Amino acid sequence: MDIKQFNQLNLGEANLVLQPCVHIPSWIAKLVQQRPYAAIDELYQAANAQAQTWQWHEIAEALAQHPRIGEKKAAANLSQKEQQFSQQEQGQVEPDTVLQQALYQGNLEYEHKFGHIFLIRAAGRTGMEILAELQRRLKNTIEQEQQEVKQQLAEIALIRLKQEIQ
Image (cartoon, one colour):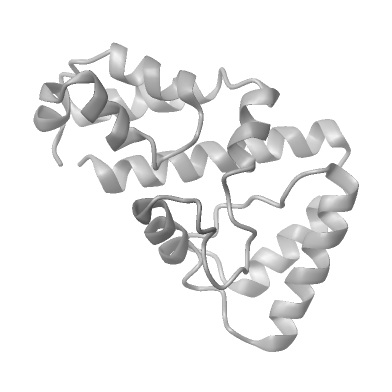
């Protein structure tokens, strides 16, 4: 879809287009309300700016909708579009059983420490790079990790937005 088509959608349709990008209703509502956008870059800039305003409770709710990194299939409660995004984003995570086990164990340790899933922009990263990031981030404080999660979620949302609206 191009920016002109997005600008012309009714409120409900526009919400549906943005929903697979991130489960943060305030982000979706703000981007829809700010239409029309003169150019696609204006939408991307607005999306990035709005992501910087996210509060932790919104992020925590969005995390509940994300599959764990390294899971073979996206969660069944995700829309078809979200499952496709997840599969594309994690496509470079090698099916190596040792790596899968290390990611699984790291995820458990991470969830025990931070109380939520490990979230990372998987697109463009190998499984080994993701594992290295997981191990590095396990050393973070809760506050440091919340900032990293916010940044990673924003990157994922913007990648998905760029795939939806060009």
